[in-house]
Image (cartoon, rainbow, N blue to C red; front, top):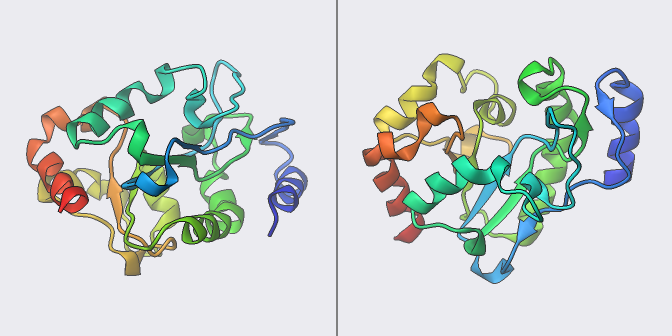
Length: 198
């Protein structure tokens, strides 16, 4: 489905939560040939009502990416070797955690689009770094993901295998919440480095 068709469908079906914008943030990538991982955010909605030309406001703002960037540096990554995008590309009237239809919209419209997009750009061996737990809820097959297990990924150095998620890639939780700052989870950080740099 084309992106304009997706937007039209969402604006009709989810009129109460959809927030119109003439332009959607574009993915951020400095060197497509040098990409080591895909960083995935939720959507561009924010309480300040800012509109971005690049995902996470990477064209002008840094605040939205600051905590993610700190974690990325701990595993040897920078914006120069990443492909950065949102799962849901449109704006909503509420931020992700308050949007009760977010997973439904992501599953119905944006996951198939993102899978095609990533498959056309990168081999299946390029992993996805998920910056929020709700991404796992949307992307994992039913029965695999449980909210109560978020810390387990970090404690046990676990990942979502390709056969348990709809993108069919290894998904590595890299949550932006301060509780999951990698300076508190050194073993987990080292295990991610082994995957990325072997």
